[in-house]
Image (cartoon, rainbow, N blue to C red; front, side, top):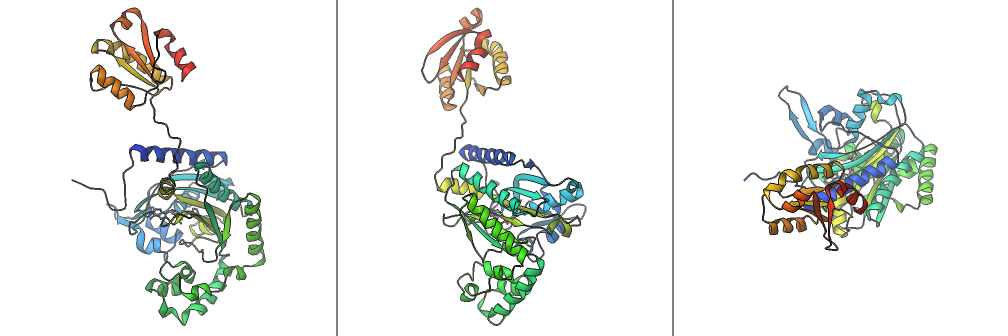
Length: 416
Ligand code: HAM
């Protein structure tokens, strides 16, 4: 038997209904905020992620699925969605009409150690807003995510925020961090020793060394922000309060992708072991670093699978409805011919309709209608065909009525 690959899973049955509901709700919320759908390829040139996400990040150094295609090109299965959207904006010159507001959803791939809330094929739902450096746009994307979670019934959400400043601020801050850590770097894990040289900010959110007292006493990035960066961060906090979004400033939040500038944030619940259910921030230099013009940008992505995990942990029952409207029941093969146009008309009118495909007994057909939770059964026997009058059974009240075929659509229009 061929089995699925570690870190992937199949979606069917109730889980498929949940996925479908969550995707549609995300789409509806994004449309309310006037975001437009974008879809970019799952495979891209490896260089996009090296330059976009960053050569020294864990994602690019340890987690990407890289391969050569038959034309000897270096390709990578996308580990995240932001770089692909940026590439598309440059390649299609979409930046000529700003602002741009996009949302997307789909599979990403990261070679991580599979565990609860961590998959190798992970799904993300995200938004990207291009063109505005005004904190109102930072707030727009955060509130979109927050409201979406509320609509799902996930209420115990905190938004962790931090500012990592612009390039100049960060370079100053990095120097201070190096000074702070370098004499005692032997106390830290091998990854942190590397990080000290390449990206000392990442030491601050190291999972292995999180209890080291040097992390707690590290200089605070907020003390290094310039006046404009400070004012923007204060504005964001003010707006978060205005919108009653539960937030907390977390100075150790630096995020694992290199493109961020200024605001970074994560959506967190208090559920153990699931980690952050979404994260994002501002990335004002990404487009330019990929060869496009300089366009300020902000966005985030939810870990779709983690949102589903939270729904399951909290036992939230989603209003998914898989019930059948009408089960068509020809009593024998003779009535099948007559049934086909009825079923076709009803489906074309938008009703969810089904019929026995396995030639079951009458008892079997009734059982099947129960399995599908059909609201109505249309019984078509010899008499019905001869008289052009059908029997419609309401499965809730158990009432049966006779109506002519001509009246059938009107009847369901009024009752379903
Ligand atoms: P990220 O923090 O790498 O950001 O991923 C976003 C979310 O994806 C995480 O908060 C988490 O919920 C989920 N996630 C990440 N890795 C896994 C995994 N192995 N299994 C399950 N879920 C996972 C980004 O990807 C950025 N592109 C977000 C962004 C958009 N920033 C600006 N715009």
